[in-house]
Amino acid sequence: MNKLAKSFLIILLIFFGLSLIFSAINNFAVTPEEVSFSEAIQILKRQTPEKIVVYPTSFEIYLDEENVFKAERESNVSFSETLRNFGFSPEEIAGFNIEIKSGNGTAIFFSLILPILLPAILFGFLIFYSLRRANQGAMQIFSFSRSNIKLFSPTKDRITFRDVAGLKEAKEELKEVVEFLKTPKKFYDLGARIPRGVLVMGPPGSGKTLLARAVAGEAGVPFFHISGSEFVEMFVGVGASRVRDTFATAKKAAPSILFIDEIDAIGRIRGAGLGGGHDEREQTLNQILVEMDGFDRDTKTIVIAATNRPDVLDPALLRPGRFDRRVVLDLPSIDDREEILKIHARGKVLAPTTDLREIAERTPGFSGADLANLVNEAAILAARRNKKSIEQQELLDSIEKVILGPERKSRVLTKKEKEITAYHEAGHALVTALLPSAVSVRKISIITRGRAAGYTMRMPSEEKYMKTRSEFLDDLCVLLGGYVAEEIKFKDISTGAANDLTEATDIARSLVTKYGMSKKIGPISFGEAEELIFLGREIVSEKEYSEKTAAKIDSEISDIIKKCYQRAKKLLQKNIDKLEKITQELMKKETLEKEEFEKLIKK
Image 1 (cartoon, one colour):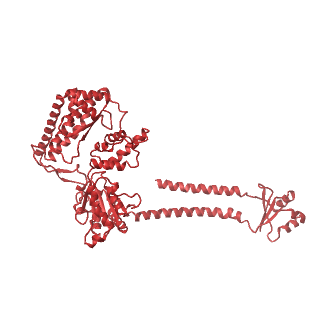
Image 2 (cartoon, rainbow, N blue to C red):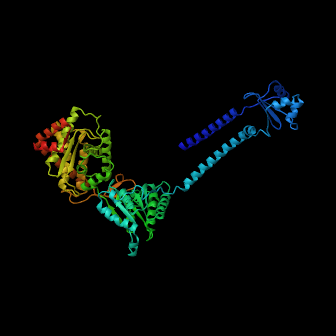
Image 3 (spheres, rainbow, N blue to C red):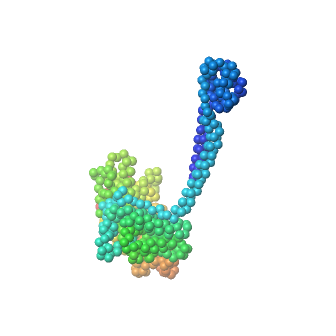
């Protein structure tokens, strides 16, 4: 509809322009008044004209700019002779300003040819415009199978390994790819075959695309980027055709890197969905497999694919000769987070007092993209506060904004709701401090952020990659601490604990069914035998255990949560005076930092 409206508007503008032209022509050319020859002679006898324009068969008398008369004359007799025949003396004839013209070309053109020519030009233009649009439509049909591949120049906005903090092992793994692209001869001389495909696996925001661009930047080769979802269309065969076009484009620019982002969009296990072998996604995957097999030994194009779901990829995609080199990216450690913050702080005006190490300590579990967002939010916050530089407070406030959302000052809690929230968060914090797990309370607040009425920030004292059963049970006690504190103080429960209960149930279920940490059921993992990936994991699935076992699992989950509930309740009842102190201080200040909280606990 937008294209049709645009075409209609163009036609209206053309007609409007033609109307202006005709109006200008009519205003410019004064139409002479038709008179008889005798009347014209009488006019000449009464008044001397400004000029007389003589044509082969007619003449025009210009008395002034507005009074113009036209009359026919004899074509085989000169105009001067005609005037003498009608009694004009040679002196009178000599006094007339007579112009002789062979023909009234301009007038004839404007009066006769132009009204015919302009409509012809207009219709010709409309026909040409219609044919051009039709030709464009036809070209779009032929270009429908072309891929929407994007090229990043190796010199413009160049990214190297220095721009990627952390990921030391991943960069070491990819350095041989860079070396192959730079000096392939020494590999060929030894008969070595460089991997054709590299699969980069990692959680969202961990730097998969950035690392692939850094490989191209280090090698100084073109970087072609395309998303897996761009191959698949509703028409069967289009995706396969786009795959062929993509690989052909990358090979022409060799040495080069072809980066396929989110390859799980087309690389899922075949035969798991609806449509069988005629499914468009499977046809596209088949073509990728064929193209990667078709790489010659001397081909200098390397395919790098990224995914955060390697478990759903087809085995044929991962076999040797295709994506046989796999690079795993983890979330950054505390040292890596500090380096990432330094990279993203480039170009930002940081105050001399800022401590990026403290920010790195407070952001466990943050990805590189989260840290980039954090620094950007801090810059925005400093600008809104009319500061000339980004101070430590802006960085700390941005952590909470990224995790929980902005402060909701318009959401004002009643005095009762504020008291319930204070006891709830004090319960979380106190249980955390009383448990042996190495997790410390960084901050407690009853200021509303996002969907949370209050929050307790818990930060581990060191980076951990494994978790024990006792640590899981401590986490359950902490999650139930707010629920228990409300029950002890008010003899009632609010809806504020809903999210805590959901998270606690999920942890308890994982203990029983996934990690084998249940003493009653034992070291058994209860997975799901069959699932339709096309429809999703939760819609169609089949359990591989009986209903009797399912009842045992539910009973064990309930027992674990009840035991943790009783443990948290005993801890809070034994330290009820500390709970009251924390709550009263929280009601007064609304926010307690780590040092203030630890001082209250020591008292």
